[in-house]
Length: 170
Image 1 (tube, rainbow, N blue to C red):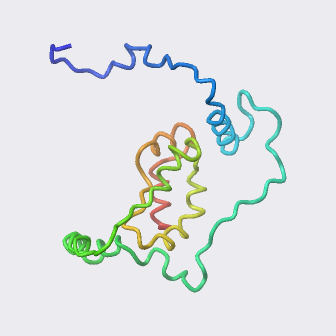
Image 2: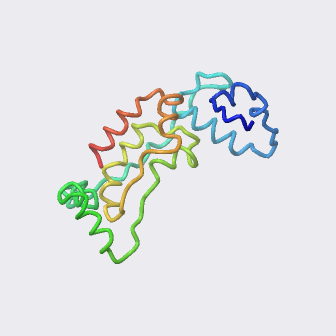
Image 3: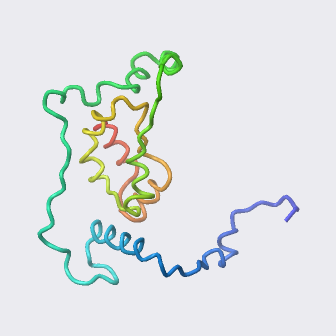
């Protein structure tokens, strides 16, 4: 359409966008989605078969070694920004002789690893350790992509509370 008129009705007016071809070899993804959904929402949903398995081992949550506990969240690039300001931060970045990395685990887990089922509770369990173990990273990416949608639609959580709670731990 070259009329110059723009609107947001493409999805509503084009239902064929959602006619996806059936891919019979996609069973591993279906299984992963089912397991992730059962882990977060329990098995009381359509298609559930039986109770959630009992006897699974408790997850191992990494802890900051006691002798380094005082360092968690106290070092890193963010502190340069907060303590010295944006100009000093920019100077530090330009002067840094090495690769500056961003860890995307807390954001990317929603899109790749666990099919949009990583709860705030789960992220908080490893947040303090991530803050300490990844203190040399330029940044930790905890927001973007599907995180807002996942928090509200699938996990029934407040995305803003998630950010605030992660900020306290990291």
